[in-house]
Length: 207
Image (cartoon, rainbow, N blue to C red; front, top):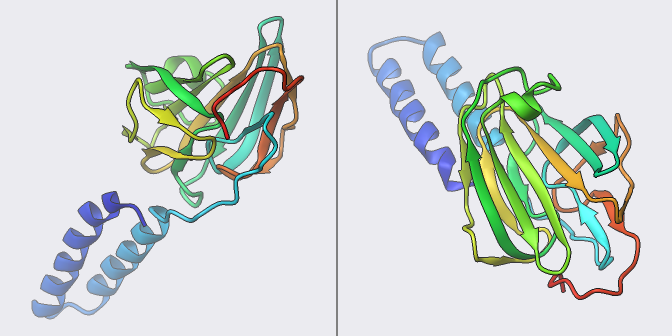
C-alpha cells in the first residue's frame, strides 16, 4: 500500500471512532468499509518485469479501450477503473527526458477526447530509444502524483507515479515499434507487453 493511502484512511478511522463514541451503529460500519476500500485502491503489488530487452510494457493496470495508428506510430489508450491498481510504472528504461504538466478538463477517462482535453502529465523516457506516455486525469481522478523527476534514471517497470481514483494512460509507440496490444486486452503495469522494438541493435539502459 502506498503512503498516500494514510492521508485518507486515518481521517476515516478517526471519524468511525467518533461515530461509535456518539452512539451510532450503521454509520461507523459504512465509514470503516470506505477505509477498507481506500486501502484496497492504494495497493502496491510487486510485479515480474519481462526480461525481453525489446519489450515495451504497460505503464498501468486496466483495459485497452482504444488504439489509434498513423504514420507517426500508434497510441495505446488504457482505462483504469477504481478497482484497478493505480501505481504507474515506466514502460521503458533510461533517463526521464521530459515531464510536462498540462492543465485541462476532467472528462470521463474512457472518452477518447480525454487524451487531448483532460489534465495530464506526459513523460518521455529513454536514451537512444525513447517512449512517451501520458497519465491522464478523469472525472473522479483529480490528481496525478509523479514520484520521479526529469534527469533521473529509471529501469523498465520502476514505479514512477500514482493517479488517484480512476483514470487513463496513453502510450505512444514510434513507427520503429511493433504493436502487441489489442483493443479489449486486460493489461497489468510492469508485466504486460504493449509493443516491441523491431530490432535490438541499440543500447537502451533497461538492463
